[in-house]
Length: 266
Image (cartoon, rainbow, N blue to C red; front, side, top):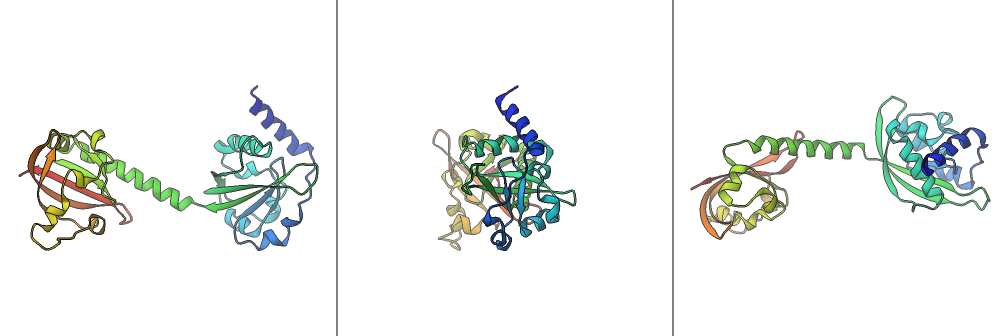
């Protein structure tokens, strides 16, 4: 059995055999008045106090949380790693830090919480308490995943297009070139990825060609579509005149992720 597994087994035993310590002074009115979800844990990972904000976040009444192991409220697949990390922090093997965990709510749903950890000593010989502050980041994480999935879906869709296509992010960096675009520009996707699109295609030349936008800034117009012609310098310093047609790349919520440029020889 590994050392960590032995420690986890010891912690499970301690949950049932070690009497729960009384909470230090800071677990009273001070914790209850803080508008941030807070949990005070003993060295065995049992909840000494959950403030009202924490109880509202997860949906459990106070009495259902007090005295329970923290792991009872964490997603099953994260319980073991949570126990190991908690024990390492208490034993000084890892600096108290921030990390994310999935919590089970009373309604049966899951919340992704960013946890900030702080060790607190009450001056006793029983060891420190652990204060956990929780921030619900479920919406942010979900939206980020959806945006990533959407972008990957878009890239996969453009990969097989016969028309040359390039995806540029909102800061003007090249994110993706399909095969047809690689043939026109001479650059592979791996070579071009991360480069400023302006280095390959002079957007300002396209937009100022009719004199209407002489001082055009890429970031200010990323949500707009435009068309025009430009002379690009392909790999090998070969100048090539191309027609550029662009459209904004928008996710399911209407958020602009970047632009899609279709390129064709002029």
